Image (tube, rainbow, N blue to C red):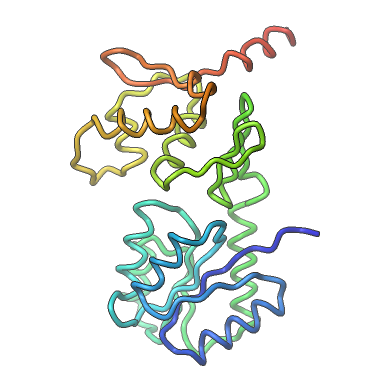
Length: 234
């Protein structure tokens, strides 16, 4: 049986959450709900494996734009804005904020499901798995496995190990890592990278040695086991 995609539905209207939730469940999705902007962030950060978020724009406490801005600091999870607003400027603002699609109320539930499926297919979640030297990263579930045992990583720790592995064999400066993982608008100290590297190494155990320190420069992910396999193939 294939694993179901988990959808977070965020809307302050109970009727709307039920309408969307019932239809998504019928179409073989797992559904979790949030009742406002603050609740959306709480549910998102406490629930693993969310594949996509359906996010209402006009909500109490935090609106959809504020919620998306917060989430985009840590995650690239697909987001569909759901709103009664239909003005072009509102849609543009949504896309600039990092939304993947924009659905105006009232809407056809069938069309919404079609858009969800299109986005999930476009993101090719089946290929979002990386494995190297006994470390496996499931980007869809935001989970790291070491020798097939799940290891808990914070969002930033996950983004850090994912970035290092994506750029394996490449020498990366602390500044480049900061820009990629903490985004260009981060104004903190480069020592933040050192602190997180230390935590990631500890959680990887012996495989933490794959993360090489380049003194006075930065870091590089290098797997000796992979090198040996490559040499044997030659």
